[in-house]
Picture (cartoon, rainbow, N blue to C red):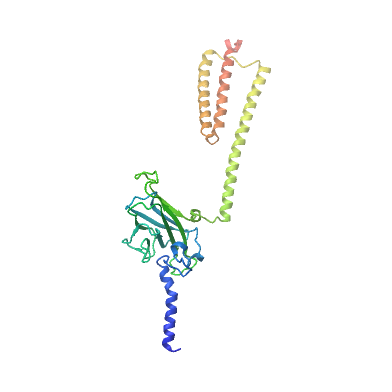
Length: 322
């Protein structure tokens, strides 16, 4: 093999290696080397992601009508979303020979082999393409969309992935959504949105959340036990007073009506306010534990009204008359 043969052979091998890189930098190619049918738009991208679609790539198209109007032009927005750094890539959209695409937009080209297919001429994202519906009712129109997200290395490596979605636009007059309705246009997507928000939780974060949960639990239970114990002691003290007063003191001391009336009115109003607050806080979900405190205050004021009435009815003694 002479010198020129070696140069020609090396050149051909270099072109063979570079050609896929150049083709992939602008998104998915129209044809692959697979067994026919060999269209990427139907088979997917065999040179990225091991030849299988990835749910981590969300391919979406918005502005899609529920049903088309003959000879009307629609603006579709095609977007790629990933959780990785692969925020740019390419797309290919096919309408299976129905309708026409406008290839005048910057970075958007129609495929030479299929007049109803469109792709991008350079790596990007958020492409706006125009599709004009057929001039007459041809029934339901099927679409196929492939999008690949690349990491910018120029090679079909593990940093690249793709996904594929199929959708339909119904025939004219087959949907009930009005033309001006906000649901007349829709967004169709494929992919796993949860994969975009997966956050790795460290052991320190787990322990911090556990400690916060424990502190909140102890604080809540501590308040419950405190106020419960306080209420029990208070009720016990009231009963103890009543018992010893009746057994050894002969009953409550006399209270003149001129003093009992304003005292009873004041305690009664306070009891009604506390009762209203208790019901209101209970209906609002407890008010952070305040419902128990207000309920205890209501019982105290109500007991005060009872004591005022009891003292006013107690006969006066000699000491009270002097």
